[in-house]
Image (cartoon, rainbow, N blue to C red; front, side, top):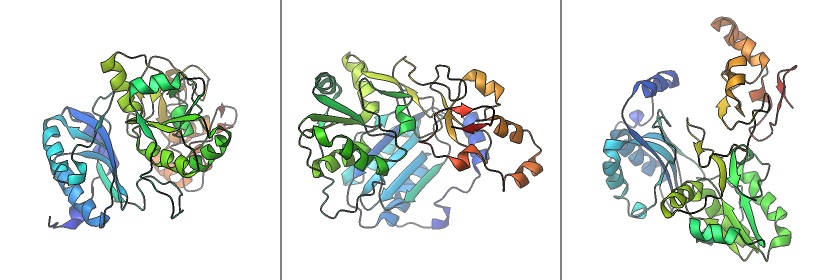
Length: 352
């Protein structure tokens, strides 16, 4: 495919206007994710082709392209879903690929299309030339997952970040306190070093991280490595259609405007400001902070959707004063990463 006018293969409208358009758009949309590990010789050309195809079909979302493949979280206009599938199937390596359809979807997940070329579609920190990413663990459907996880000799490990597992996880799962997948891989290998002969079950949101993680554990000498096929998203779908017991507690964190989709009715997390039962993630309304945290409705009202008294009071300042002070002020979002917060110290308006 010949690409013309490449300068148009990027979004050129500001985020505020795009979000406004999303809120006012009544068009039914389907949120989905997919990934494919495949060797791409020219990621940039592929990226431009994919952008044009998606743009023509009204697709919004976030897609990463690398020499090792494609990782996508997007929303597609319902009326264009078949056309989208046809467009993807023009690439032989996409034919028959599973699309993970969102479980709890209101169509307001993304408001723009972003496709970026990266070194890897999942940042893993692996630089060992002998590592074989295709040597993955055994894939399990929901039925086999439930059966195997019931074995007391089985170890279940969550391959997501702390702020994801905090609001939802499988019963009895180990949930490492990490902020990045890159950090989690060697940590999990060390944590499980004394369990190399046991069955290791791992899971993530849609399966992409477990493809790497299961291969990494096998590379480290683990023999009985299993992974949840299609991740939590596909598990929830299979549990419902097959009438199985749902072993997942709480919400599945998602990386879009929804920030989560409910898998079960249990609330396993707490508000970071008052400690009340709550699993609603939000980003601080102070744009100079924007830290991700959990906030209940009562605290949302008290703090005006911000993470602290400092951010609330700052947000109440006139625009000009806020823009000037924001250049030098330090807020929670500039001091802490997503994986380190636990609770708020209200008197100081900061994390502890």
